[in-house]
Amino acid sequence: MVDLAEGAMLGRASGQDGAATDAHALVPLTCLPPAAWQALCARAIEPNGYYLPGWELAVNASASGRTDALALAARRETKLIGLLPVVQLRRAWKIPLPALVSAHPYGTLCTPPLDRDMADEAAGQLLQNARASGARALILRDMSLAGAAMQAIGAQLARDGLRPRVLQSCLRACLDATRDAEALLQDALGAKKLKELRRQRRRLGEHGTVTFDVARSSDDVAAALDVFLALETSGWKGTRGTALAQDQGDATFIRRATRALAETGQCEIVTLRTGETPVASGIVLRQQSRAFFFKIGVDERFAKYSPGVQLTLDLTRHLCADSTIASADSTASADHPMINPIWRGRFAVGDVLIPLRRNDPVVGLIHGALLARRHGLDLARSGARLIRSWRDRRPHDAAH
Image 1: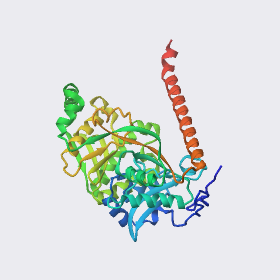
Image 2: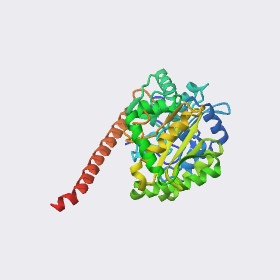
Image 3: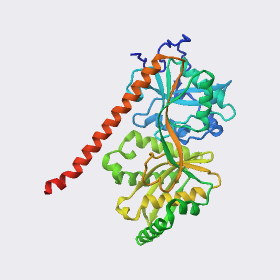
C-alpha cells in the first residue's frame, strides 16, 4: 500500500505530472494569521460557523482527537482567499493511503470558506496545493453538497476533466428564518401538537415562571456555558460519558471557543428556566446570515414537559425575529427525532471523494478502503443494536 510520511510533508507524488511535494502546500493550522482568517470568513461565499478561527483554533488546541490539524490555504498575493483545515487519511480513519481529509471541527459541517469574489480561483488553489502535498485524493466530509463552495470546487474539477464521488449523503433539518415564526410552527406541527405543547408549558410554569434567556456578551456566555455543561452532564450524555465537561480537552475547547466567538458577536447561549431552575440550554453559532444549532442539554427531571422542544420553539421565534438571520442549520443527524418535526427545511450534506489526477489507480484503492470502512461501521452498529436489544429484554425474560 502507498504510505504517508507523518508531519506536514506527505512524501513524493508519483502521479502523471510527476510533481514533487511542496513544503508550503501544507502548513500547520496555527500558522495562519487569525485576522486574515476572520476577514476571509466575513467574505465567504458560503458560511460555516465551525470553521471560524475562534472555533476551529480552539478545537485544534485541545479537543479530544481533533488537535494539530494542517491547512490548505489559497492566496492572491498576500490576501487569504480560501482555506481548508485537513488531516491525513491515516490519522482520520487509520487508512495508510495518500489522501487528505477535511479536519472535523466538532460541529457536523466542513464546508471551506472561499472568498465570494474569487471562489473559483480559491478552489483551484486548494486543489493544486493538495496535489503538491503528495496527496492523490481529497475527502471532504460533512460537505454542503448543493452549496456555493461545492459548486466552485466542482467547476474546477470539471476543467481538469475530473469528477467528485459522493460517498454518502443525507438530508438535514434547517430553518427558514425569513418566515413568520408562528405561521412556520403552525405549518410544521399543526394545531393539535401546538396545543399539547402549550399545555406542557403551563404545567412547567407550575414550578416557576418560564423564561427564555439569550446570553451574548463574553461574561454572560461564560456563565451560561456553565449551566449548559451541567445540564448536558446530568442527562444521557453524562451517563454514556460523552458530555463535553467529562473530557478535559473538550471542556477547555468549548470554553475557549464560545468566549472567542462571543467577543466577535458570533455565539449565543439560550437557556429556558422555570423560576430559577434551568431546564434546557443550547449553544448557537452565527456567521453572516446563518445560525448553527450546535448542542442542547436538558434537565431530564422535567422530561414530561418536553424542555428541549420548548427551548427549540423559543429559539425558532428568536431567530425568525432577527432580521440579520435568514436560515439556521440544525447540524443534527438526518433522523433527529426532536428537531426534524419542527424545522421542516432540508438540505443535502455528505462526504465527497475528490480525485486529484486523471485515471489514477490509487484513487480506486482509496475509494475501496473507504467503502470497506463504512461497511465495517454498519456491521458494528448493527451488532451494537442487537446487544442493546438483548440487554433490554433480559429483565423481562428473567421474570418469566
